[in-house]
Structures are given as structure tokens and as C-alpha cells.
Length: 105
Image 1 (cartoon, rainbow, N blue to C red):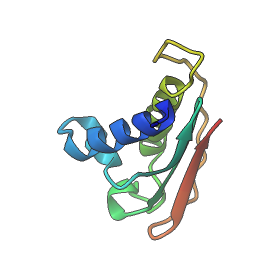
Image 2 (image 1 turned 180 degrees about the horizontal axis):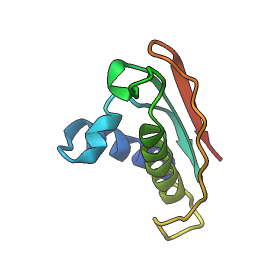
Image 3 (image 1 turned 135 degrees about the vertical axis):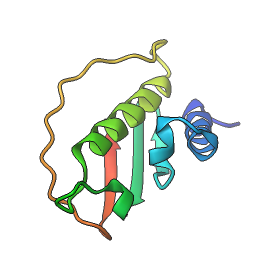
């Protein structure tokens, strides 16, 4: 039997692969695991993720956190909502070629 987390991970992967909207920026993000309100993703930092100073763009980080958090919340067996509000402060010192792993828990 397929778990809700596995279904959400598959939905994330298909949505990102086929979208033509802003989420296309996440096309290199791969789901490592997704279960009961937790989602782990990873991606290789490429030039499309960088700001003019050559570090990971804060807007990309915010978009990634928003998307992963939303899908993780959807994977929670005990929650029936998809919206969440958070305060987010970003300091980035990540450069092209670095593999990043994003944990939501």
C-alpha cells in the first residue's frame, strides 16, 4: 500500500516537472523522503539559483521553503490544511556546485 507521504512526493515531482508557472524554478529539486508532515529534498546548486554575487538567491530559498513546507504539511496524516505562515530570515553563503539538502520537520 502506498503511504500518503509517497503520494505527496510523487505529486511534488510530477507537478514540478510539468509546470510552466513559477515553480519551474524547482525542477532540479529531488524528494529524498516524505512522510507524516516531514519532507526532505535535495538539489545541486546551479547558475539559475544564484544572485549577482554568485551565492544562493534568497528568493529561491524562500520559494523552496514555501513549496517544501506546503507539501510536507499536506503529507501530515493528522492535518487537513495546506496553508502555513512562517517568519523566515535568510542568510546564504552557498555557491554553485554545492549539493544542498532541505529538511522540513
